[in-house]
Structure formats: C-alpha cells, structure tokens
Length: 232
View 1 (cartoon, rainbow, N blue to C red):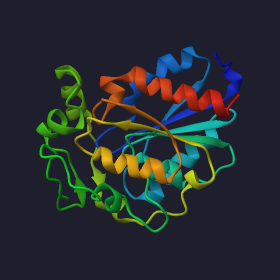
View 2: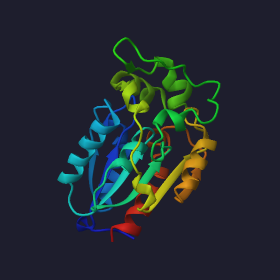
View 3: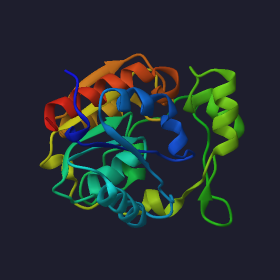
C-alpha cells in the first residue's frame, strides 16, 4: 500500500550518542512512500526535557503521527501525550513502565561481553568510547559509518536514565517492536520482555543495535507497516 502525503508524518527520534543523521538511510525511502518525515533533535539532558522537545516536533508535524524511537528514545516516545500520535515503533528500544527508569530496563539482564563499560564524566555526561561503536553499538556497520558515528556522537546525561518514566503511551496506543537479535547493547531477552508486556506487533531480525545503518530496509518495513495500519 502506498500512502499519500496527506496520510501524516513519521517522526524519527534518535537515541544516545547520536543525532538525527542516524536516520539518513530511512528518511528518503519514507518520503518516497508519500509520508512527511521529520527527525526530532533531542538534547539528551533529562527524560522530561527530551519529551518536551519531541512534543514541539509533533506540533510542527502535518496530520496524524507515527513516532519511531531507537534505543533510549523508546522511553521518550512513550512519554509524549498527544492525540495526534496514532502508533509507536520501537527499534531495539527501551520501554520502561510507569515508575521504572531507563537504567532499570537497560540493566535488567546481563550485558554482552563486548558491551562497553559506561560511566558519567565530571559533568554527568555519558560518552561512548570510540571502540564501543564497532564492538557493540553497530558492529555490522561499515568502517565509514562507524567513523561518522564516532565523530558526530552526542553524550547522554545520566539524568536521562535515572528519571522515572510516566505512564507509557504504549498502554493505550498500538505499538510495533523490531527486536535486534544480534544486539550487543540491549540484550535481546530484554527486548522480547519489553515488547511482550506492551503487546507490540513484533518483528525479529538478526541485526545489530543500530539497524538504521546496517539494515535500513528492516527499519523501513516496520515503520511502513505501522504507518499504513494506523494513519490511513
């Protein structure tokens, strides 16, 4: 099914150590399918502030909205309360329940042996070590992609992962979840747990933590599935 521009807007939301450019392989194919597309620029300062920025991006969107969140952004897309949001799409994303923190779900299961050891600096910011991108964040990506990811990374504040989540919108809105079975950052078992309790439509693929780079077609497919089901 091909949608018209009037069908609505896909709002793409990046996670930690990234910016909107992480969706560069996804934007044009979605526009080609007739959707308006925007990438929300999260400051990665607190969950509440990131949610507020996302809400402003939704205000600028045209028509009904599908929110797509990667990793940490899963908590952000669920925190927004807006009737124009018709569905949520999680790309290897974190989905804390009410009262839980991002850290609670991130550390729910043991980390992969190649996952980096992370700690905030003296400013309370968590940076990804350069080797962390190739070892865990995007180990299926190309060398060029890894170099760009490391160069443009933005740190995430420890406040983002320690703030308790509000009532998540996945309790009342249809959700889709792409489980990254080769994820070295968020344990696939944790992903299956979160997707199951939100009663999401699950699509599972042997991809790494950042399939927007390594398998963008899988990301595009699940976004189109959600958009065509809820925006038409």
